[in-house]
Length: 507
Image (cartoon, rainbow, N blue to C red; front, side):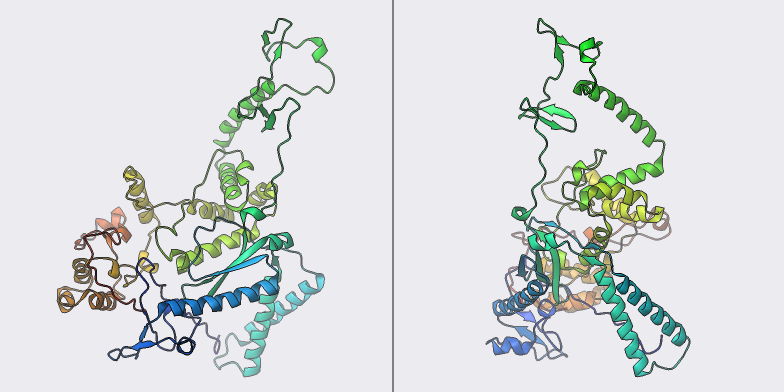
């Protein structure tokens, strides 16, 4: 539609915190990537000094006092957090520059709520008018008149408002929960709601206690040590009477429950039959597996709400790659998870009906999301026995055609500042050519890394751990690219890095 454009913001990555704080590089028109919510004027008014770089085209520079910059940003985030708390009523709010990976809290999400008839009518009217205007101006070549463009904006805002009102947090969750306000990868404030501290969790209902001091768990009576209690009967001499023996007539009174041992016997047969039947119905098996995964992925205590012995594990990545939770990929994954969480029924007991009622494509999408949460392709130095797992991760990357150039670029922060000069030159030589490598070969580490970042920009070069092997049919058609660079060493390892401190430049 002419006259209405959508603009995409290119977002650089945040500062790497594996190194001591260094002066932050200025971007044209404002703070660097990690400080986008402030402007240079605020920094200078607080007594900060900017080191100007006279040899750059954009007349950029560096913030000399990184600690002051952090304090200014944190103060701004705290003000935003206070505004959110006052407007929405959360029990607590916390502001951080970096995402608090080890918060250890459960998260809740908003759920769909019923709109009033008046709201539904207003929403339908706005939607109908928007569709009518869109059809009216779709094929016209001239730009939209200002009044029509304004009306488009008003209708879109109104529809978006109704969309936001369709989902809301439970008032009890707001009263017990809180909000994190964190600096996002694009330099803006990132507001994440719905976190429940362990001490604020609602108490779980306790299992009923048996009169003999035992506890009944899943229909089985156990003692305080978790051992199954003997529930069989004994004769006059104290000998155990098998549950399979015919009970005497006095035991056949109306209303007497079946013995626990008999229930275990019967349900064992039922379990065997279910295994056989489920293996013959792939579509229902997909629903059952998806239910087991979703129950544990989206619900507190969901591990007891399914009958499949499947335990999904999702390794936290924040402790292995600093700032990874603030990347665009992490935000996209979090948004997808939040969208599914908002659609989930509030009670896990209703989850089976919800999944069974989805169309096949939606079940597959939910299954894929839950399965994706368990992917672990980490290579850790203390896990030397996971060679087959790493090989499987490589095959998975090939199968999904993983393109890491869409999620990662070689910069001073992400790679070039953390490897040796020889490895920097090898990367430039492989991606650009021998001449380009020779041009920066005599430079100091700081300048070499910055120049290499510029040379590698847009080339699609990746270090070996991030490369995806092409499928076999494609590899047979194309010659294998020569491997020039060595594998990346462990970051900050002694004896392999040059101890040359350098400022962290913006991208």
